[in-house]
Length: 200
Image 1 (cartoon, rainbow, N blue to C red):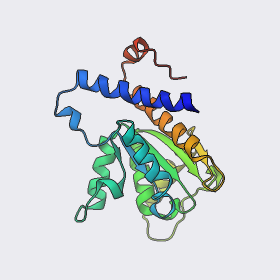
Image 2: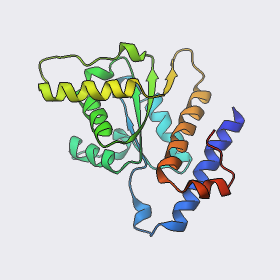
Image 3: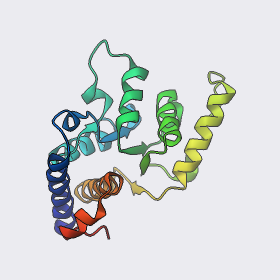
């Protein structure tokens, strides 16, 4: 577990150093590397919040609504910008996730923009996730949400039980998965090989 933790930390340091070498000061100010999609009542104070803090310590710029938004911000406007700008997205699925129009909208937008998405199934199995027709969504949105959810369910992700799981190991594994996907998205794998970074 210690090796995995240092691997994620080393990757974050390399990523930060690499950006400083190739980006202008304005480009370095981009607000969001990782967008964390989650259902607040289930995971804001545990999985999503802790992952946000963990990624910040690794030098990554994550987006979490409660951390990046202030009173007066328009929800869809600010969140949609974060999704458009992010390089990697984390979708934290939980028992109440599919009851939220906001969660499903974010997921659909992430998939439509072809973002690299890391699913985390928290206290829920993929087979238990389904879009419910509560008569408040248009048929178009129901189709968008269902399509995005199916795509996420068939993407390799992580599973975690908050009552029995090892929190330290989970946060390390989740952060490591995010960092490796960031490296892949940012490209220039030759650079990483020169620094002896292994994605395996």
